[in-house]
Amino acid sequence: MKGLSIVFMAGALTVIAGCTWVSPSPQVKQAGIMVLPQDRVAGCQLLSKTQVSVADQVGFISRMQADVEKDLRTLAMNQAGTQGGDTVSPLTAAMNGTQTFGIYKCLGGHSAAATSAPSAGSTIKTTPYQPPR
Image 1 (cartoon, helix red, strand yellow):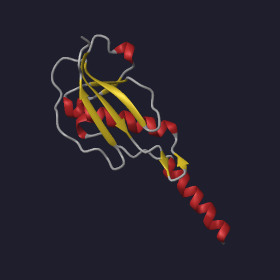
Image 2: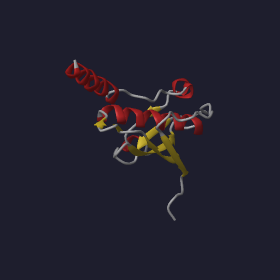
Image 3: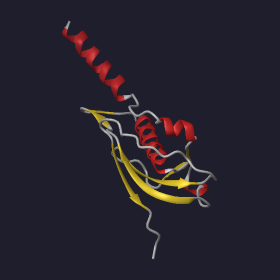
């Protein structure tokens, strides 16, 4: 019976480790915010940079890298929705559940800007763009 409970616990941790935890905000869905590589945002206006973080481990179990990266993209897109951006582009690679994205305005018109709280276990740090001197 003890062996069965260990198998059940291992299975439960595997399922939890493979889940995404961050949902797109209504602004992301409404504005159609995109994720593009850096070579595709050359003609866009950089609004800000944002560093987003999610848990990359549940206890001693590492989350699936694809799920961590999806959560990071979703957090960046949610942040773009609060700042009137329509595109995000990764500026760094995901490492230890943290990644930096640029928030861009690539399309004409205005996106609806509204605030959205990050989900539990997530952090967002946004800094305004400072052009080089």
